[in-house]
Image (tube, rainbow, N blue to C red; front, top):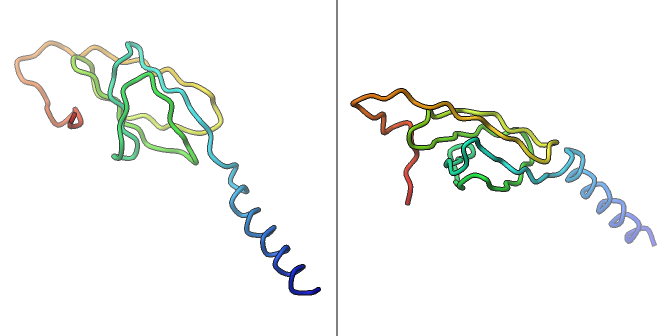
Length: 103
């Protein structure tokens, strides 16, 4: 009898560790204007508006042609966020390093 009770207790302890951090939440990320490329922690990308799963604070990079690239910290707990983008000043040279690669 002791062994099954021990296994059950171990299962409860392990499952509790997974949820103690609050789990993950879905966040709708929108930009004004829409259609920007969103990259999270330098990995993966989506075009706004898009939904992402957050399990903790994440550093996002938002880029759209003709607008200033922006770093933004995303945190779980909200259901949506709208990030305003600033128009880039007209110039002869384009900073290609500010935009992530698009495949």
